[in-house]
Length: 448
Image 1 (cartoon, helix red, strand yellow):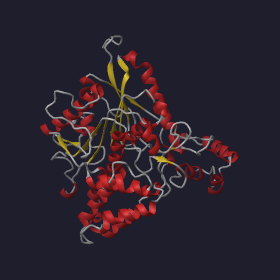
Image 2 (tube, helix red, strand yellow; image 1 turned 180 degrees about the vertical axis):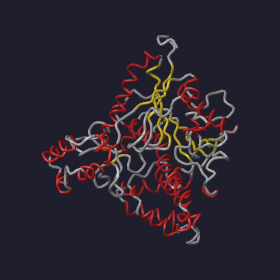
Image 3 (cartoon, one colour; image 1 turned 30 degrees about the vertical axis):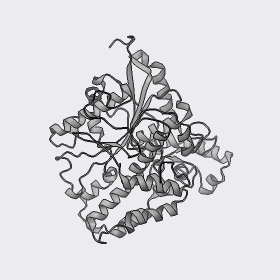
Image 4 (cartoon, one colour; image 1 turned 135 degrees about the vertical axis):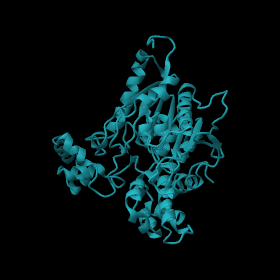
């Protein structure tokens, strides 16, 4: 490649996932070359501070927070300044991420600090609207408070005073801890251990709902795996024979009532009540119908944490005149997950990455790769590269046209033969995309 040619390559700026706690920009290597770079784009992956190093916050000037997001923004600025020296086009940067990386992409499009840096966005299995991605008060998430208490640097009473002098002492104490010790901050307290971005006066100076309205139009690919939260149940379903037989209607009800993600809603009691009606009380299954109640719990988690927020964000992008290409990854290879009961074989969180990144067969769960797997991988690479180059995953002429999101919830069902479809995950769209925002006082304009 002649780095100084006048013909510059468009850039895919990739942000890894991992719950803002784990992960690395170095996870994906040779497959990126074969399935993405070979199609005429440059791919840049980054690292950013995680856990308390990236998201500890006192919600004031002592530790404003959002350090991990500022790392991402600085990396984006660096690429914009210098990518031309590597043959890239600084005016054609598309940001992409999966899971926490997708949430990061969503957040970056909202920050005034990224204005003019982003041409397009790809949001995989994550949204700023997902519960807990951004926090407005300690009553929603107090991971920083709990970490300071855990390490003996504060007490609950001292933290709640928000006294600048006490906070400064706490910070000095936290800085005295080794990296190894601080890395143990994740976990150890119940339900509140989500490291979140916070509203501040710099990176995120307003509520999401207001920042959304100020976001300029851009082309967007956004979507989910069909059974996102299956990933959290697979281990128990395969390894614990008692897990399934003990799961009942009451189990799903208790699971819902204890869901810490619901704490992020201002009217959490009402949201819980309405979710109980929609996902438990209205269902016809017998109390001891173990399979269907586990499937219901998987659907609840998938739709609350991933699919509903994705639809809400997609429609918000559309409301500000963005060209939105929505997808659902619905394909599972016949040979995948042979250890799992056939009733539960689905498409879990992260499943698209092995097709997008072109993982070798040894990393695709060990099953025999079929022509359908190869075709699926090719479509992911082709659509993503086309989008980076043209702002459209299926520019003319294309035999299969990915429809833009419109009034019929149009989307692409991804698989060996991508299928243009309508009515994207209707229950998630209606409940988490319309009912819950209305409970919170932000009824979207597109909702009935």
